[in-house]
Amino acid sequence: MKLKREKWGSRLGFILAAAGSAVGLGNVWKFPYIAGENGGAAFIFVYLICIAVIGLPVLIAEVLLGRSTHRNPVGAFRALSKSKFWTAVGGMGVFAGFVILSYYSVVAGWSLGYIIEAIKGTFYDYTTTTSSGEHFGGLVSNVFWSIGYLAAFMVLTMVLVYRGVQKGIESGSKIMMPILFILLIVLMIRGLTLPGSEAGLSFLWSPDWSKISANSILIALGHAFFTLSLGMGAMMTYGSYMSKEGNIPAASTKVVFLDTLIALIAGMAIFTAVFATGQDPAAGPGLIFHTLPVVFIKMPGGYIFAILFFILLTIAALTSAISLLEVVVAYFVDERGWKRHRAVITFGIVIFLLGVPSALSFNLMADATLFGLTFFDVADFLAANILLPLGGLFIAVFVAWVWGFDKALIKMKVGAEAIFENSGWLIVLWKIFLKYFAPILIFLVFLSSIGILPKIINFFTDLF
Ligand code: PHE
Image (cartoon, rainbow, N blue to C red; front, top):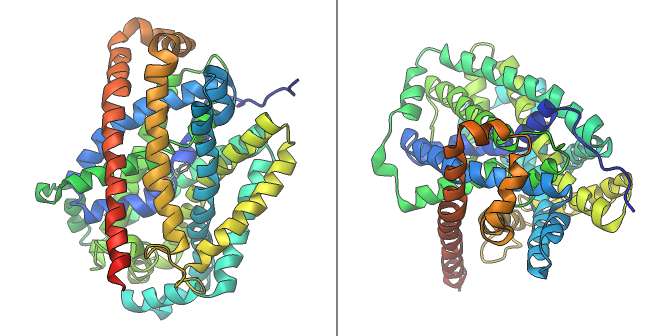
């Protein structure tokens, strides 16, 4: 009934593609500013624990579900359970693919546009963060600029996914991930060698425990999901192209290691430069688009480093965007019998159209709000605070309690015999984390997201 399903060309291919999915705007744009806002080192400590105790175990579970079934998220659950409920969980992942990619590519489009701004040298016209913030505001409220770059970024994503798993996603990741890594190291060295960079380092590495609150723990946990691309089947889909010989726990650990390393290096590159040039480290989401351009024009060689930085950010976003589109495409190819090319073109366009109101949230549609949130905010809130944690919770519960541990272990052992023989305790740890820690902690994050709802409703009622 089926055409031969695609596969990764090599083990490294899977690792680089999965690391490409994980490393994205979450690492370079979001991680530095949330670490900055939540106490630097103390927050990073909590984040690392979340990654180890929940991120890695859930990642292993997702990849395992994919490799065991060789299916997209819907097909994977359907292959292992008769219940419609679990198929719907897979369907929620495909839906999340639409939602996340639609607003993710808006920010990625800005980054693409900023490469051109950097090349044109426009940053030199704005010497304070206030004026560079206005410059940014002016660009995103220009409909042609924001929709144009959204479309351009979407086309890049579609080209890679159109070419297929090996020729598009894998080859693209093999080229882009090393470039990304080198650019980041160059930027980190530039940051570290600026006079006054120590202040940035001590901001990142000397813990201010007083800033740790229940809320910042929840932010760390939520971010662990987002940054590892967990909870919506992206890693499951990538796992489904893995051959039986792949070593799932080893490959997953490498992906987590790379993702964490890159977030930490990005944090160092950014904060050393921010402190050395006397900017505000707690600038929030605008840190990259408002603060960094001013940082660049104040540092020697900044013209070139600005261009390199936005190329880096765009590459990081692109290798994540292809994994989001691939989830949607894999579903239509596996379950509905569509041709890859048709699925890529159709859903690339559909997701672009869905992204338009998000892009317009910063201009024409800024006043079209739901509970005080713009379309962009609603998409982000829905994805990061509801769909991903809920999906992650269900994946952990499914593997640990429904499919059953013993069956999961038999599948996982294939390719990972050495770990089972020599380090059995790691497997026991995985079991404890996935069965108890992950579901309980994720449930708490989820409740906290829901806890935000009353605040939104209050905000809304206050308007009247
Ligand atoms: N992990 C990506 C990032 O850090 C975002 C992402 C989330 C990608 C979910 C795929 C799926 O930017």
